[in-house]
Length: 386
Image (cartoon, rainbow, N blue to C red; front, side, top):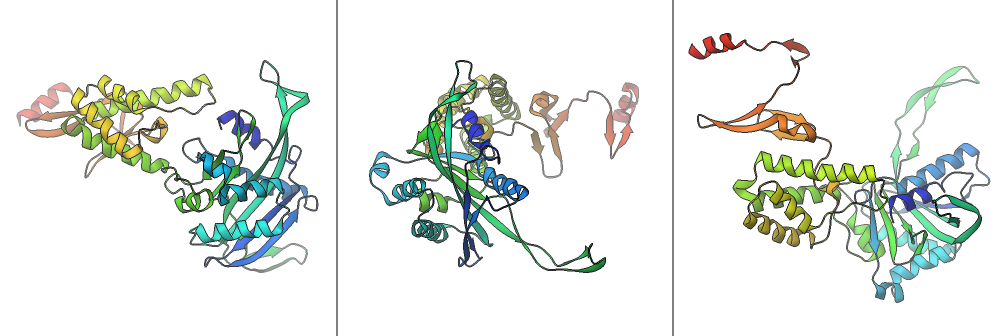
């Protein structure tokens, strides 16, 4: 799925656009025991409750492609004959009305998911009459391409509130408020089947995780029986290790600053182009970036080999490899932060056998909020002479 297709489905989760008639749920405690199960009709809920329920579900489609949102791909054999794919298709086809099947899905989630706190499994089914698109991309309300039938699942942690005092307005008294359990935004979830080329793709699902450092690989393995994607934070950490190991003494500040600037430029260009397809760079493209930054050929070749070992040769999103928002230079006692486009204000030097980080100043300088003056040239010469 691309960004436009995800946005199109996200717009479904508004009361005036949604065909979701009911929400199914299973409340599981911290020990993995089912406390209760329910099916709640949205027709019987207030407008505010419907908006909040749909908003919670919609968060399973939030975030960036390649970070919080990742494609899960089923191989042909799984689609033809496998328990995991058969269950997802059956859930979709029965519109979650088969209670025994829904119960079996809950049990599969509980068996594979590792959560240290109570959580709520939420399930919803929607049928979307996909409108035709005119040549200019605008929707045509007079007809539809097909009915896209799908299920959305969200795993929401439950948070316990603390006892507190509240003011009871009708009785005009201060009284105690007991402990409540609040539904948090989803920790993970998925959409099945994927909405590719504005049509159902039963070979794919869209998998969501709120945290870029933890994507619950046990859930992907247990539900989809596929290889879980590497978390975005781990991709960045691994990329840094590869650079350090491959480049060795050629891993200079100038090289890293150049790599960050070039990859950041790719991200900005892609954003400006409004291309809905996710941005990705191959190992070959990354090698060219390193060579552009002055890395010797043999070190660039070593990088390619280590990249292949770590990532299997697949293309990655540049946003997962470098921090495009800030450039951090850290020593044991000092940390310098700037934006990547200002990285040329910082340089490293070896002076009299000592390592220095130099920061070129443009404008005023403050220390703890107080403006400070620099010594004048003659004063600096006197201090040096002393």
